[in-house]
Length: 270
Image 1: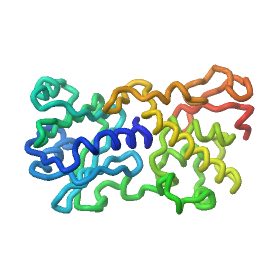
Image 2 (image 1 turned 180 degrees about the vertical axis):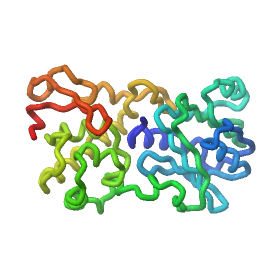
Image 3 (image 1 turned 90 degrees about the horizontal axis):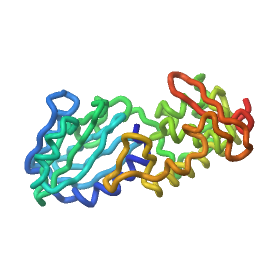
Image 4 (image 1 turned 30 degrees about the vertical axis):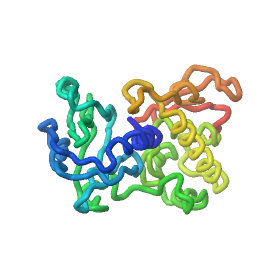
């Protein structure tokens, strides 16, 4: 699933291609998850921002289109002249024809993504967006705040990170990477204040590095310019059975709350 770095990469690449452009026509798959694409015909794109793993297109008329890429969602921009051929792809779920002869395509093989059109800032119908925790780069979000939020929870720290209420935008890849760098075992249910500060610091670092590299491409993720390169720099995620790059101990994996998790039994002792 695209996580914060992948969504942010797509945002920065897509925004200059759609800003101030008007949607002259649109089409979508008949699934209720994608029909909202048709509701923005005639609207202008005023901006594109990210919240956690969501893209939020700001439109005139005090409306927004919320885009979630799910597991396999991809966005691309092609000349309208060739878009019919591209959109005949059975996995294209929505398309928007713009007034500059370009077309935005939304492709989603597994159909776990979703589109919604809402009034500005009204996320009452999207609970995961409405109840999302702080952005990791928010300067007002501190290690003390992170530590305080973990104290009232009984879930394992890895599960807390994935839940989106502790901090926004973190998924399986960057949770494993940040916990590894911070030296925190993913199965513990509580962390110290010092560990919380270290975790937030390392989380910010791994996310920034991934954004700089265009995201992590393992299978489905593509940004508008192709593949990201962060997969070549992962220290922990997906490396079970290989030596730890810090101490040489063989990395292990287990399922924690339905998510495969990799860690170093020496660097991340309980």
